[in-house]
Image 1: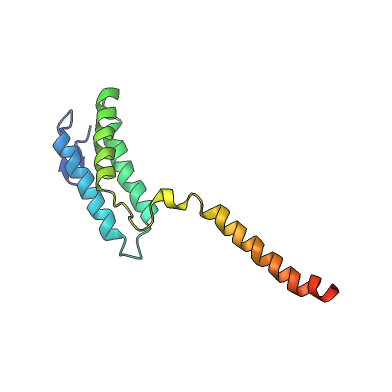
Image 2 (image 1 turned 45 degrees about the vertical axis):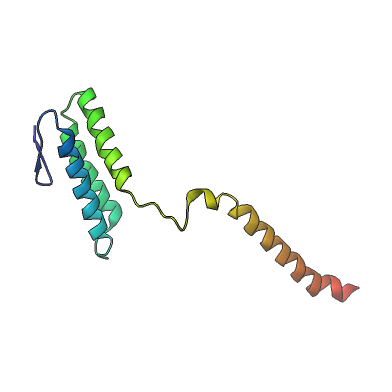
Length: 118
């Protein structure tokens, strides 16, 4: 069983501090990769996850669940919240946009066809 992921050596079972350091390192790598156009972020993230998976496949189910709970929790903690575009603010945009488009179409039809007939 390999105990090294991206240069980090892990104990068996892995310590929480080691997992947190790995998650922080992966987040830092992703932040840097955003500015490189030659890197496809989807492939990059999958490669990171593959290396983590290769390590965790040899852990027992309890250790594996604990590893992912800590790793994913740290990545979520480090995730940037977009204060300018919160998720809840977009819930009514679809209905509003459709209503505006329908009103514009009705006005165009009125001035193009119905006004000429009357």
